[in-house]
Structures are given as structure tokens and as C-alpha cells.
Image (cartoon, rainbow, N blue to C red):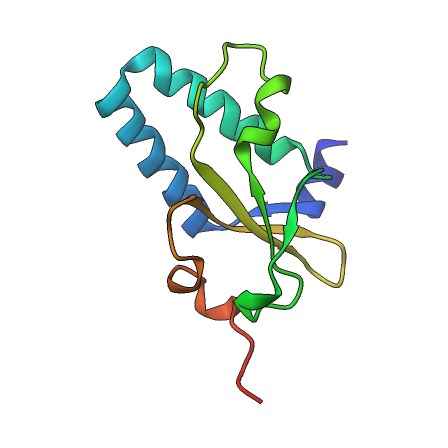
Length: 124
């Protein structure tokens, strides 16, 4: 089952770096316990592959772009609750059905400035 799931779900290197930076800042600003809780929340958000509550983002000019705020996964985390999660997952589903996570961004970011180049739709 994990092999099949791996083919259907991919976290890009950029998104992995986003996660590392988020957790580093969480540790620095809020301490180890908070960083552990935030990591558990990010993991749960990534596991919630059907992502109820995700939002289509056609204004990003990316075919199939969607965002999912990680706060929607708070009730499914067993290891403590994050009070005020502030990040969202930017993802899309490819034609073969693979869900590709491009970025994990702070919800105050201007998304259009953080879209990977290969996500941008070429001008018409």
C-alpha cells in the first residue's frame, strides 16, 4: 500500500524546504513542544489527501491549482493541538492522478510570488 500511495502523492523539494524552514522557525520562536505539534499537524495535513475544504485557485494561472489550509486538519492530530496554524498547502493533481505538493506557505504570503516556475501556465 505504501508504494501505491507514494506514486499517487509527491512532495517537491521546494515544499520539503518550506517545511524545514517552518519547523526551524517554530522551534526558535515557540519551543520544542510547539515545533513537535506543528510538525504533526503538517504531516496530518499532507496525509489528508482528499483535502476537504481545499480551494480552487484559478487566479494563480496554474491548471488545477488548489490550496488547503492546515488548520482544517487540526482535529485529526493526536499529539496535541496547534492553536493558530498559519500555513497552507499549494498543490495540484496531475493528469495521471498524482497529487503534487508544490509549496507550504504562510497564509499571509502573496501566492503569485511563490509559485514554482513549472507551475506557471505559459502566456496565451
